[in-house]
Length: 263
Image (cartoon, rainbow, N blue to C red; front, side):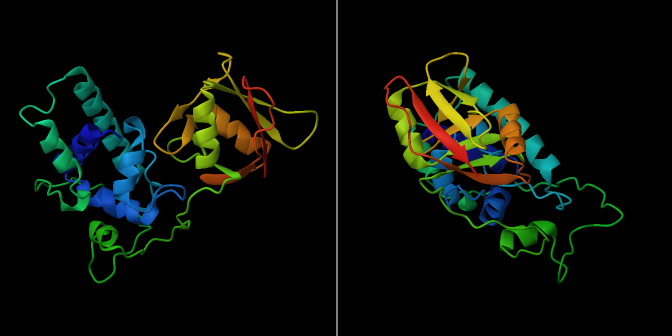
């Protein structure tokens, strides 16, 4: 995100009293191909997807499960839209003041005190607070008391792509391939199969019949639910996050990039 939007997002979280919770959730449940640091993540991610691309929303959290974060995402979308339409969104803050505040670590922002409305606990709660600790205290303290499979945070390798179907429904390319796509200036991607081979081919060109893609500071990303669903179905994969192998560019023309995708 741009510096101004990082400041706006941190301000937004603070107003919602969610700045420390967002950091705590990112520390525990960040997607594997995200940066380890939440501050690095904010610099790389697109403003539109800053919440949905941050971490897996654990379903067995009562108060801070998917509904909470989806609701926060909707509120952020409105705030971002209002900021885009209003050039004076920062009021008296000068550019250097915004930059200084944006660089302040998220967990050092202090949100207003307020009462959060708790959802009634289900008949069989799936979380078990220990020693009287609340759900929020467990997340913020870094203790992992929930029965959730946790993936190891790492960067995608040069022969890998990843698919997230839980919240953002995005296909993410590794940095090496992303740089190649960016330099080619080819704007669209089509997906095809050759014969009965159990492989898919991603073909980048300027053919507008393809799917458009976007960039953040390090990766090329395509967010399209139908696309990621069909890819997982083709390779008979399940789960929220899958990694596939991608070949080097097979095309010999500057008008195309062609990659072979396999398990």
